[in-house]
Length: 188
Image 1 (cartoon, rainbow, N blue to C red):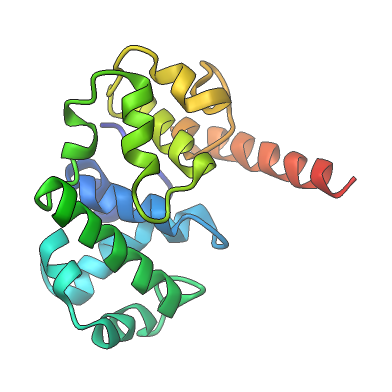
Image 2: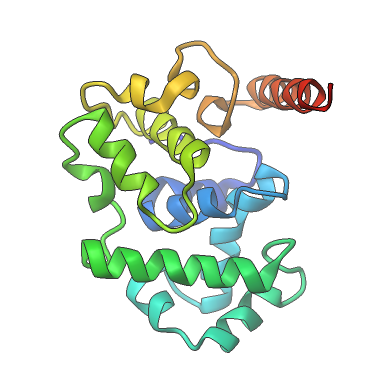
């Protein structure tokens, strides 16, 4: 995988080696700058003192986990809600995939199946699931037949619509410009 966001080497390295970190980052990518969302798993691992583990997070005392999220600086703008969402995601991964986050996409037979699996995860609505399918295809080479169709416009080659398209500072700027354009259009 080639995740190279402006979030520091340690945070990028974690996203590149940990499917769970990548899922958590994508889950947190709402109502905060994407750099903050995608750097959060590395800070969470630092606060926990070890690599992220779905079973451990799923079983963590919910109030204590909120405390981990809320520690200054908070891991998200809404630490209580997002701590609960991360635990919900980890519980689903434990129940459905034995705690193996990569199993969500490892053997998906088609883009439609991949989208269905991602969309079934807590916190992954239609748009977020499509973006994650695009991210898997563009950055991880997870490309079952039909993955671009399943990702919708986020899967388009040469597009700059989401984190799936960010490979450097210029592409980050293009994605930000696209998002601003979409917000402006929505206000009209």
